[in-house]
Image (cartoon, rainbow, N blue to C red; front, side, top):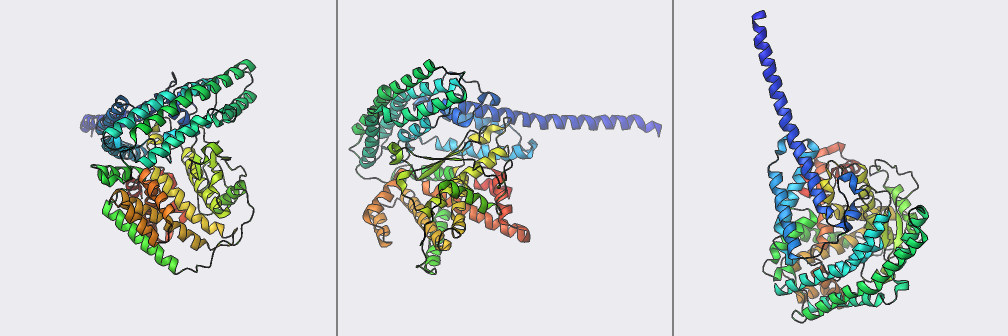
Length: 583
């Protein structure tokens, strides 16, 4: 036996060497991927102070050192840089051996590669995007973001004032972009241009009354709260100086930016009196297909999507015809928005997993409810959830638009959509699950609105079952009605932008359903201005329902709604191809 020992020892060392080499290569690919993940995350945020502030409370923990406050402007150079960076990320991903990655990194790698591949294609059509839509353009979005800009330190106050003072330059960049769009034949219709002009002029008028301007009053409120919390960091003199600087920007610089944008739009209008969908332009259908994939996360073929929507519409119409039409809301109990959130937390507890760090029995709603300033109410959605930084998710805000005049039932289901079990719950669940760790933060900047909005609509429709306990309604009828409305809008979105359905056909179709002329025109204009928005909600919802049915078939007797909800939430924001692969 002794004669075999040297050979055994040699074989052992050969084996050990091969194992070490394997571990080395295995570790190398994971190390390279983590490095790329951090590089992408840092590159996407370091030169955009506003996005950085809303993403991270403590950038240093994620390897980002804050320099001078920067609000990136729209320019050809910036667009080319973004496009080049996207291509570079894809090339670096190609050099990583996915098979050597750990399970969590494989999932993240798959998402990142698919995401940047799609974004790379979208970058080829820069003038098809519209940053100044009348309903959700930057001219309205930015003031809302500034009004909620949180102050964690005095550096945040200085950055805020610096960014606010850059708005006029930012608007100049938007003006240049819109001029380029007009040269490419892709500027908006005269009707929509006039809406943007009117919005801009309303902000110019607002700056003439600084005492009541929401960017003056909200800044003063946040500043005083900061001084109460940290009296040693800000003196009375510094407080007065900050207030004076903010007021000067609002009175002098801000109206110049808005006036410039209004003047540019006025000079560009007059060539396109009628609004039309993307399908009427040269590459519009291609762009719409790519945009739909990005905003919904669905990779179904366009024909399959169209067929799915038609079948769903027919099925819902049939279901409604079989439901007693006399069942409706007959009572409106006085329940506050805060009480509604508490009710929703209680009702959802059996079918949804508890938050990793909070159980449903806690009385704290993890949320503040605020009402949109009347100066902005005419331009804002009925309600929205303001997503918190990924490292500071304990403070959450749901905004309600006081001009929406929502019924008690509508407010209840809206809070299910925005709060529990909707956006707030799903967002905090992802954060508490450590989905966006400092070592692999790339997933926090991969935008999967379809995953989030599809989920919010899914739980909103589910919440009608809860509402039956508190309102004298038929939850089934109310849910079917809401479902049908959204299905119709999603179908019109597809027909207008992909099939190039003209306004007259849209109005005639809606009129056959009993929709008035004014309502038809308003809906048509909104869909033209916001392509894929309804599909972002509704097609994503249908994808979730399809995924749920697949889970039911695969899991058999072990299926439960609780298990499916946990699977969906544990997966985190993703496209639906990846979710099916995970299932």
